[in-house]
Image (tube, rainbow, N blue to C red; front, side, top):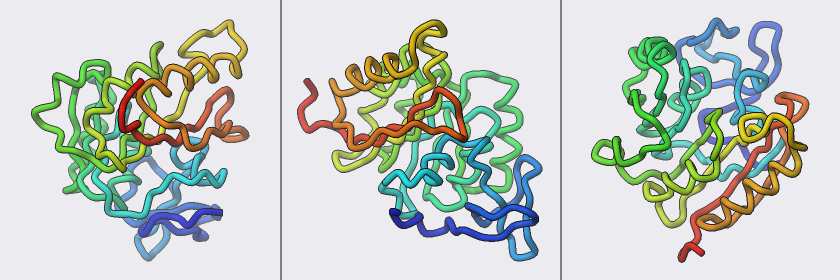
Length: 214
């Protein structure tokens, strides 16, 4: 199994044994007396990717663009072990919670923006090592392609594909194949893995930018 990033460990936290990061609690998760808090893979697609043994390429300290940050559950853990972390979320209600999470994390920068319109935050976001994407919208591959411009040439896309957001009636595996095919126009897909039992009808994808998009 690939190594975990620096700053992520497997620990006994409360009654839970599993992934943990060091930082202030953000969503009522169990903590221990040493500052570690449980990272619940059932509430985090990236946590599930790590738990299933996908090779995310994360080492710790990376600059991150997180698309679909919602209220900050996963991105709070990312900001605990990464470098500057830009958190894009378009819905005002969860952004209020995200702002609260960011108050305790000086490396976390919330952006009330639409991930489908990267031109609206291109003046703020620096080139990044990693794009983490968890957006529940049709056209998830197109979102990743639109945000490819922010990635270093040797960077990584860590993407959770939600089949029901693309087509609620289609077979999930067919949806995944179609999304990955579209994604391959600008990325080389290194690994794909279903995220069961943590998330039904979700696919984890690890990819890197193609040197010359198709």
